[in-house]
Length: 258
Image (tube, rainbow, N blue to C red; front, side, top):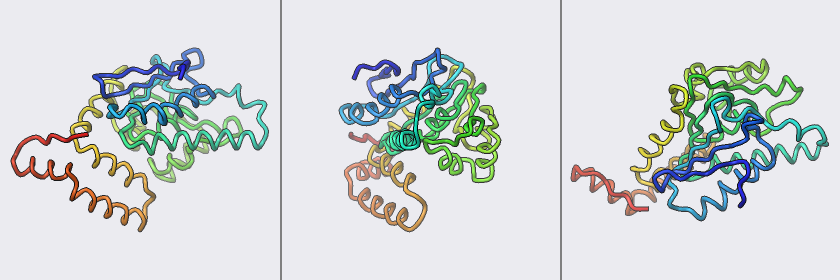
């Protein structure tokens, strides 16, 4: 694919950094960005099994992603708008369902679709100057890429309701306090911290990491417990588990194979 809006860089052969590069629009999401995200979390990762984790960030320090490109909204009819929303939901779900860890490194504004993109990642590392929010009601709209659902899961129904209805922004410190951000770091340190987390995870059993992601993503209930039991059972007889248990008993570092 000819990337026009996202820059890709591979760190130490195993960690992919995806930088949304539309600085003139504060990295706003448009059709091209969605096309490229869809490709990255589909064909690209399927053909690059050597990638152990992904960081998504925005160019510059003003914005992670300041929202959707509103210029694409004005001519939409009902069916087109619904299709646009549904496609965004499916693409963001593909990020959440990725079987390797994906971390959002958030500098500056993560608003609207940008906040939804960050929430679709498995973890978020925020700068002290980050700003999160879902301001869609200011436009007479609602979030369309999963924001009404993921926000309440991450920070609770009552607080999510407040932020959605008031369109208030919260800073990085508040996002960290509420659990929206996993880590709060100094400005321009978000990618570095995200990579440090990915490198730590890369030392663990890759099958177990993927299984954890899948189980956590399964909605709470009996189905989730059954899936957990099945994956635990499959893991116990795997070569990965045998290596991990033997390393523990032998008091050595496990050498997991991919």
